[in-house]
Length: 176
Image 1 (tube, rainbow, N blue to C red):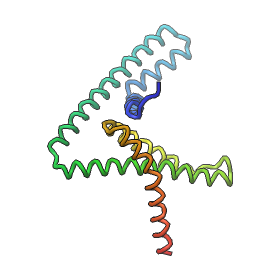
Image 2 (image 1 turned 90 degrees about the vertical axis):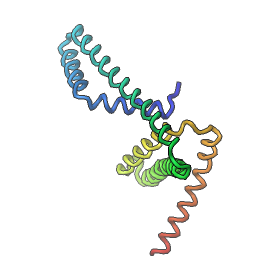
Image 3 (image 1 turned 45 degrees about the vertical axis):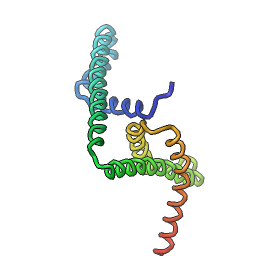
Image 4 (image 1 turned 135 degrees about the vertical axis):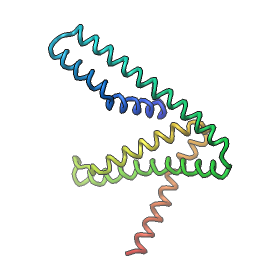
């Protein structure tokens, strides 16, 4: 079963916190040391502690996300309609720009790889990752929109990109 972008975002956030958690890191070191020493009973106990620590972090993240969703919904209820409309516009603009970042960096890498198949423009890999992360966040927040809206939006993203690229091209020509 494929995970939704929201589920992937939550999983990524949990994994980031787990890997950055000093207690979990210490348990991992102990576990690795015990496995190397072939102390399997003790390593099993440490592995259970690692699972428990992961569970605590996972539960905390999931609870905070639910609380955050409720706060956002409550906050938007009290906002003027114009502010809500601005948030919707800006959020959807981020989705489009994230798609564009990913698409354009892939195009750049394709052109570069024509010259040298093993070549990549590594600085764009980080930009792609940022774009994917932004899109995951927005997808997570925007799963309340209808499938028809999302499909229509995705279909029009390419059209908007071509218009944007034309505008950038015209700007560059006018400045040279």
